[in-house]
Length: 79
Image (cartoon, rainbow, N blue to C red; front, top):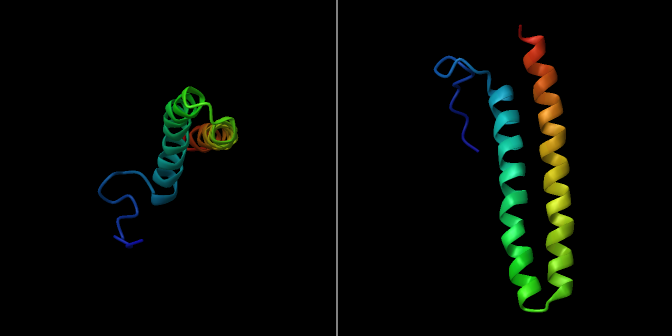
């Protein structure tokens, strides 16, 4: 990963807050994407792969939920 040294000077958002926002969005987007992967595996009758994607989706959902909680706490502290 390249260090741009931005640290919020351009965006007005500290890197660590931006990173938390990015992580949360990526986790939730991944959970949505995995829904189509599950459907593909189910359609092909590959229950092992469908279960794998369901477990991965659960992890992505958990990451998204934890990210939202932490983000909410951090944003309320910024007031």
